Amino acid sequence: MRLSRYFLPVLKEDPSEAQIVSHKLMLRAGMIRQQSAGIYVWLPLGLKVLRNIERIVREEQNRAGAIEVLMPTIQSADLWRESGRYDAYGPEMLRFRDRHDREILYGPTNEEMITSVFRDSARSYRDLPKTFYHIQWKFRDEVRPRFGVMRGREFLMKDAYSFDLDAESAKRSYDAMFVAYLRTFARLGMVAVPVRAPTGPIGGNLSHEFHILADTGESELFYDADVEDITLTELADAAPGSEIVDRLQSIYAMESEEHAKVENCPISGEQLRRRRGIEVGHIFYFGAKYTAAMNCTVQGPDGTPVHPEMGSYGIGVSRLVGGIIEASHDENGIIWPYEVAPYKVGLINLRVDDAKCQAAADDLYQKLTNAGIEVLYDDRDERGGAKFATMDLIGIPTQVIIGPKGLSSGVVEVKARGNGSREEMPIDTLVDNLSTWLKLQRKG
Image 1: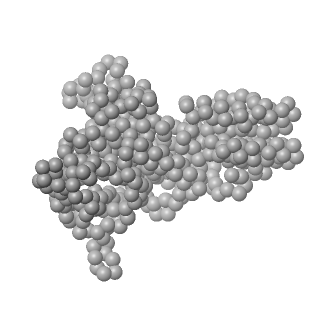
Image 2: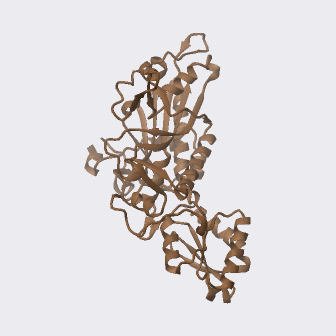
Image 3: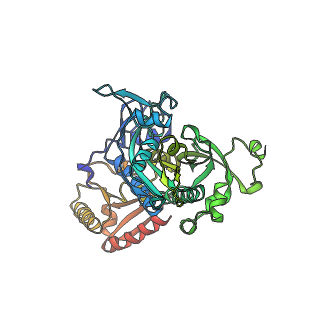
């Protein structure tokens, strides 16, 4: 994409209404614009990041065996009355009536709807287990929406729902999703700490929140230092009920070190790590709470009716955009992890008024694009300093810089946004060399 043809309304100064880093940088980088309190337009750059996160979430849900559906944003109040949650949910739920005076709502979650879908279709224990998921916009009428996409009223969420015959198999489904979440956050370039959590209005007695580590996080966490060393390979091999899953599920978030010593925390000394985190996911096992209330049954192996055991599993997809920025930025702007970056390479032509520089930059842009590398090409008639500032602000992982001095020697400069390292590469072999460079960036 040529920047001269793109829509990237960057801001030079921090907006006065933004209070936290991610909100400031998302506005400055031209990712979002506010339409009303807690509701945003996702501009092209922000939408690309959102879609990359959504893709990774979807891939890991599919890998865990979940089946994708798409449920509507608008739900009937009658479904929520069946479960008993309509009056109990609170003012965060947006309730209204249609032209026929029927009570409806903008869904904050989908336990009732998916239970009704399953109830109308499943007949036998042979229809189990099943896990369904969708990625859909939600609305919760926060009394004080703030912090940009971190606490908005409208947000994109992945929510999944499992149905099992008994508690033992339901726990296996819970564990499978537990591992899928850790894999998802690892692929996003984040360290995620799973912590035991209250179940709140969802219900049940088993629940974990997932917090990505960030110095600006809203929660204080105390956890086993080994969490930070768990690899994707270990998670790929982790089976429900395995030692690694049991160990990770035993971790609790504590409000203070002294508090940790009082709820009998098994971790102490140097192994007890203290960091701040941002909640980006929450999973629940709540048994037959909804299937019993909504008369959802299947025929068991012995012919008797059984209420399936359920769990639900949420990831804040749009919230993750802000969370990743909180965890990965510097004084110059965003530092995107490779997998979620809107473009992998930022191509900078320092001298658009120089015919050789222009020809070389145009040629390289075409070759990189043909090689399947996503490139944002800054071909604007701007000074070099402004171009560097824009690329640093929007966080493209790798910058390729073409200027008259390097070009006269047959080289271009390549910069890694994350650590600031630079090296010169021959322009004739740049595409091959850059493919290797990007693989290294992707790994670390």
